Length: 545
Ligand code: AMP
Image 1 (tube, helix red, strand yellow):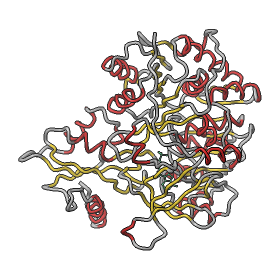
Image 2 (cartoon, rainbow, N blue to C red):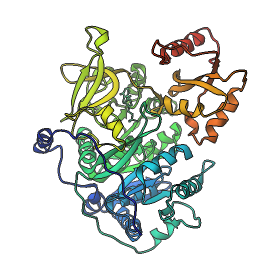
Image 3 (cartoon, rainbow, N blue to C red):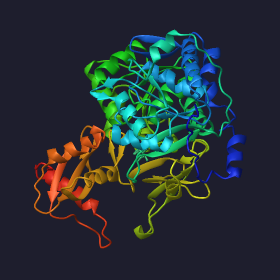
Image 4 (cartoon, helix red, strand yellow):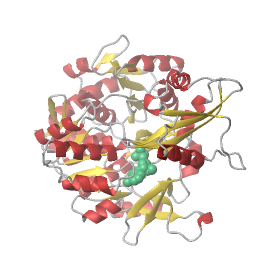
């Protein structure tokens, strides 16, 4: 069988002289992710590596499982340059699979559990996977069936399929492989080869595939191990999906590099988190603002002091009162700033002065450079778009046009975020230029939802904006202009989005039907007018819709 391969990335690299400097200063090495599991098993064989669902797996046992799944992948012809898509809750099997993909030199393509047919179709078309890994029906969605349908539509009949916690014709069972004796040694690949594609939302209609190499991913991981002084006695707690950069780093790569252990949580339940953190003496965790807020409240209600040394909060704005409440509970929270494309723009650890942790989004990480590019129309200002470069920058996006828009010839990445940079290198994020809805740290492109709405025969125009939300920070709200004489209501449009296979979390929570939308002279929808309108209505005590 000839397996399909990941298309090449065509993006301007960081210039050679700068890369040479990263190497000279020790930020990048020749180490590859293929050796992560075997190195950890050699150095910390009896230490716990992952805890989930009542199971404790040591680094030695983890390697044995990785070799078994890797042996199966190799037997399917999956190796260097082949993409493997995997979608799963935070189960220990998913942890094994992610390391097994790297063990055979393949490219890991983690997919958020909330992705439905619409998103899966896009990812499969872009990455051309040689194998897919998923679960049977989970929370009402038959993942394996969706993969089967999409693969048969896209000529992927030969794609190898692995099923976690279930069986299905045409799929190999993880449990059977784990009970077998297949084995394989770590593959040889180059540190600059692609090893990971993470999908992230920008302003374009569909999620963008950001490609990382061992060089960037391990530079990133080393930054964090050093900054938070993680060692083999440390334990992380991870409720964020393993498929997001936060989950991937804190549950998989940081523990593999440092010998630490990760406790995986299948879903976020703050009371449960407090109990689990106590039971396993968790020392660090990471998540968006909503997690920090709810953990502080749960610890307060349980009258418990946690052993946490660092709560890494980022992915969304973090208000000072949230930091103060955490501090009062003895939770040393730090704000950090980064993104899938360059995950650690800033770092900070829990021992930094509180005001610095509460009022800035951290200090530039070693090797990372940032510039602020003010908008020419704003006159003299210290605020502007944050543009960054560093050893952990992705190789590029899978789609060439997206690289042209985001990366310049000197390797700088335009983040689409607004902020300030002080003389000591502290970054403060103040807003964004990009049209993205940030729901509790999970980002969606407004365009993606608008484009799907426009496929409905009754919808003539659509604009989706971010409305403030107490729990999630932001939620999507839609403004639509209907075709002449139609009176279709919100339920029909929400149903239409579900039918298009859009992830449920992206469905607008409120709908406004309009005669027209406010536009600039050049025809762009003035979204700030719509956002102001929502704020005004709320002030008056009215509903959005
Ligand atoms: P992601 O690629 O999903 O990690 O999302 C990255 C985006 O999250 C950034 O481009 C910012 O828009 C937002 N973000 C990350 N950290 C912060 C922060 N500390 N404050 C405000 N927004 C943040």
